[in-house]
Length: 215
Ligand SMILES: O=C([C@H](O)CO)[C@H](O)[C@H](O)COP(=O)(O)O
Image 1: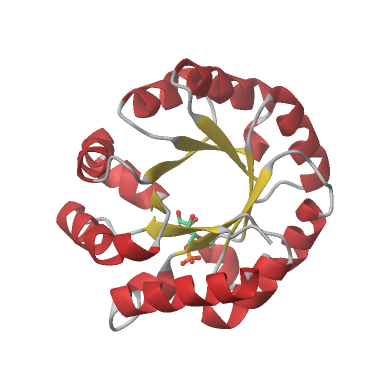
Image 2: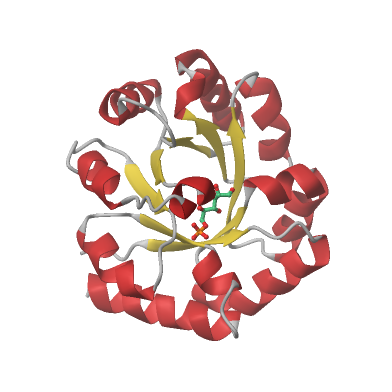
């Protein structure tokens, strides 16, 4: 089984704490995600800082774009994002705009399926347009209401689309094995790392569990 990538969700609002956390977990993760609250608060300078600091890491900016796809995402790709996210609920015109912006920078697009009623249809249509990654996502508020992403993950991976599938929503050590076995290509981890007493140790444990599950 191909080894899934690990994406660290940087969800603090504090610029310096975000960079310090990235430094701690860098050896164990493949993608730095600048989370939505974090990018809204800190803006494009944080993209530039992480790009300069980590030229070889993948950098995802979780814009969750809802409108003006090409215009909004274009600036973040220009600043060094490898992947920007666009909401599936935004519709195909906006998704297509982000894809256009990504193409100009040889970058990629993730469609976030959060709150999309028909995830299979959205994933199929977005893939046809050229989106490379489908994001199965149970957001923080839905997690607080007891939801998990695993049912949606199985649905989306079973579509057999020519895309990578990312999964986010409270993934922790105890759920890594089922996540890998369900076919996730990108595993997003936020609170289970940044909320741990030692984030570097937690990230290393996640790395080991992902590698073991994929072996
Ligand atoms: O995308 C996220 C959330 O909607 C805030 O932007 C989180 O980064 C994502 O859910 C991963 O974090 P955890 O659920 O804490 O693992």
